[in-house]
Length: 62
Image 1 (cartoon, rainbow, N blue to C red):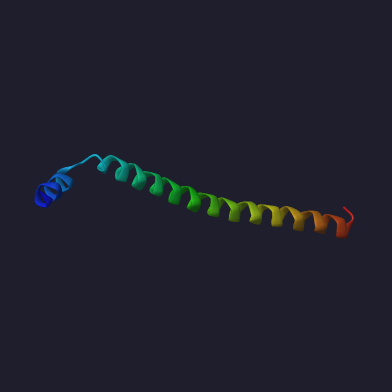
Image 2: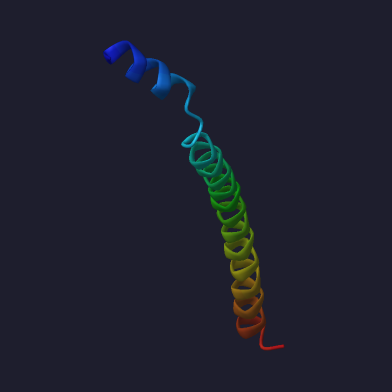
């Protein structure tokens, strides 16, 4: 009885799709986190450049 249950659980593939979808979601999530992190660094750099430019314009009076 227990052996049959173990064999049936071992051969069953119903949960396989769920695991595959979870791995895909995890990979996409990791890619999004990496992209957003790099994008935020670029935005902060651009903002810093703009504020430095505005400060230098204000200091020279031009």
